[in-house]
Length: 117
Image (cartoon, rainbow, N blue to C red):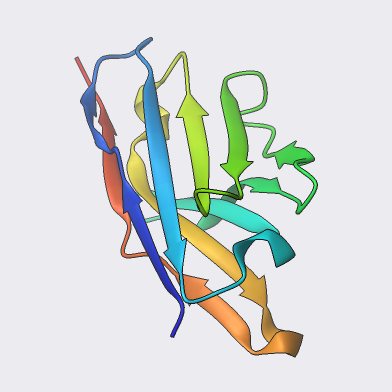
């Protein structure tokens, strides 16, 4: 089975930085685009960033210029570097792979990021 495990969340001050990691297993990692979502309290889960199999990245407008998604296929890991963090970035962040036509849809357990002074 496919498993995604996030790590790296925690409490940071506004303006600070944090790097999230998502380690994948049970899949041919390099075959799939990977995504980071987040869900703040009382809000819908939203797509934050995506990275293609070739490393091309896309971002939500709210994080563009501050966050960077990247992947290391050899390590089967996708990262989210978060800089200039704001209180509104506070959320549980989830790693995701979404390829339903190939029977591959998986979510990590989530890692909590709290931005507060």
